[in-house]
Image (cartoon, rainbow, N blue to C red; front, side, top):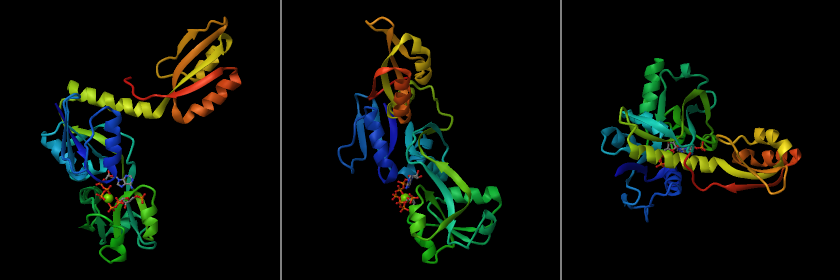
Length: 282
Ligand SMILES: Nc1ncnc2c1ncn2[C@@H]1O[C@H](COP(=O)(O)OP(=O)(O)OP(=O)(O)O)[C@@H](O)[C@H]1O
Ligand SMILES: O=P(O)(O)OC[C@H]1O[C@H](OP(=O)(O)OP(=O)(O)O)[C@H](O)[C@@H]1O
Ligand SMILES: [Mg+2]
């Protein structure tokens, strides 16, 4: 059985559970469940704190884990990203009250509050910055108002939390992050059980990003039509009963589907349909 670490709480847990569900894995029935054995799919899911997942995976006791890239870096654990998952995208940034700092040079001698002490300490070491760090568990935006620190380093998605606290970012983003699948550094990536798991998740990513498009067009327009819908490898072209017409089928990016339908229509294509892809193996 493949032993997988899954986030039990926080921003990652809902989208991670959705993705595993779409990939066909069994769900936990209630949020207090710590472990789910799924014999049909030969996986064992361990529901753990997102912050601890890289540590479990680096120990080799669990084969793979779903976590945030920033949490992986922060832990310092010996694990590596094997598949980015495209959700929980964020940046990690310094912020302060306007007028406090404009660049990282202004950090010298200041106190920085963060829940990601590992990332911040490494950044200070790499950039030769002499500043102190105070570790807080969350809601770090409030630390400045309450005088615990002059600067914070925190996850920023929309920037709403910073704005609400009257803070603004400064300096370059410290890092970008998204949800990822991780493995112990140096572990055997050819393991067929791991490969199968990754194929399933990749299938979910593709099913979410692409739709299937079908249309009929005249043979004379086929080359132009196919240029608009090249598919992932190559479109399927089948003859129609009406001579001079063909049916074309290709996957297209969901975001571009409406524009492509307009362009195909203008080319003379008709009966243009899109359908959702529920699952796939490329
Ligand atoms: N608002 C957000 N938007 C996108 N990603 C986020 C957001 N907040 C946290 N993350 C990402 O989620 C992960 C952190 O999850 P974690 O569960 O530890 O924190 P949380 O969602 O803030 O929950 P908690 O309230 O338990 O701190 C990180 O990878 C982080 O980049
Ligand atoms: O840029 P935004 O869209 O506002 O998102 C970023 C905020 O979201 C997370 O906080 P969360 O709500 O998880 O609370 P926490 O700080 O207690 O972890 C993060 O720590 C930031 O505070
Ligand atoms: Mg948080």
